[in-house]
Image 1 (tube, rainbow over the protein chains, first blue to last red):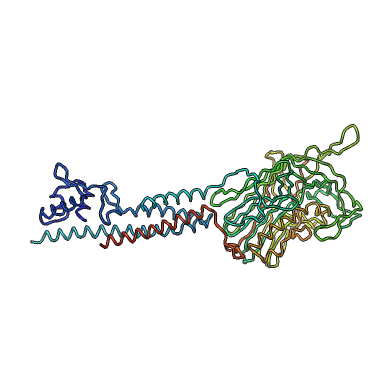
Image 2: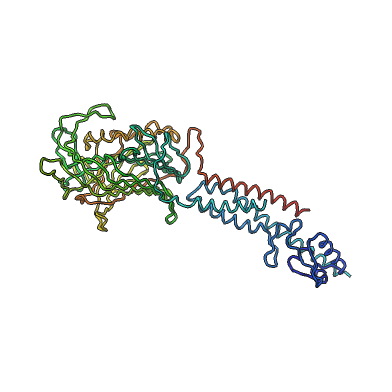
Length: 142
Length: 443
């Protein structure tokens, strides 16, 4: 997952890049992971021998992220923002149209769920990259 | 699933925007009338079948815990009679449910003989009327055209205003000379007794236009109702005279007055308190405003004395007002406006039956049982068109929604249902999606 994540965010990467960024102890480990991703159709190799992501395919939890520029952002962030705007509008409308404000309460709850999910997915990303540092620590071992 | 979610987002956005838009001043045609109107949602309007083949056009508002019910008589087959009533239903600051409504009885032409600006009249003594400023009572008969603009919503500043309007054109009517007791009696439809008649000779006339416009809004705990009255000029005021020509009635230097009654319904004691009343020793009491107190707490205020304009010019003239005893009315007025009372009372009973059965029992638009009789007077007139917009203020308590009663749940408007449904579906999809995210993340 971490290897694929890096390929997605960093664009076409070579073996050495992956080894260095993830902290693998040897290029063969990097080859092993990249080839597994290639077999699953998630990455492809160009003529320069660099690996790039096949963008239409996102495995597992990655399907809940969207690539904006060079960063993977949880889609729930966008949904949360849109629904929060509706929620704020509902609070404003409550002064004039209480029944519409009441009708929008479920959408407001959905916004809360999306914000929670956004935090959760950012935490998940942070944890994943913490593991990368662990690889690095392993790498520093004699 | 993702596409459905996106569609629902758009639906919520569109529906919210549509629901917040005003309905627009659409002219409507009375294509169908109902037996019992719909008192649900934020606002509604339509036609109700009345008696004598007549109909009532109603406007109903439901906002900030207050209701407004407006009724105007209408005929689809014949020129439309002119009679209307507007009432406000709400809870006061001390939690008392009240209903305050005002009804126009008619127009009068008077001569301000004592210079106090208001019309002075007293019909107590049938044979010796000491105070007699009334020259003519205008019997509003029927209008050739009647255009109804249903209520629309408009946000001004921080507040939502509800606006609606009726425009009558070519109003046919009769100026009735108010003279001495004729010696005749007419049946009182309100009490089944007899009333002395003062109506003298009739002079037919046409009022070129009569526009009634309303603006209702609630600011915090105060509800405002601005009632715009725009009156054209009277023409063809001809006394059918002998050969060779009929004579034309002359209103030079005459004043004009509008006559209203107020009905108050409350389960608690209330009091009518004229403000800054000048005791002139006459039966009429000139006032600047009149307050209605329920259990010693101010509940309603009729603001008088505001300016009006003539002939569309910007020059302002001061209107005046007075409160009157029932004896200031010729009995003929009560009889001539009774046909509206019956239909309007039925509608109000139907309304209160669904909201406040306790008030329904006391509904009456009877002139004899009205809580207040008042006239808004326009001392400078001389048969010129004028525009005036008096204000009614209702003092509300904590916002609370009037009990729908009788077990019926008000059905919200279609847009609100659509928004609620879309909103619930979005929540369901969100929860389903969230569970999936968690399971994938944990695996």
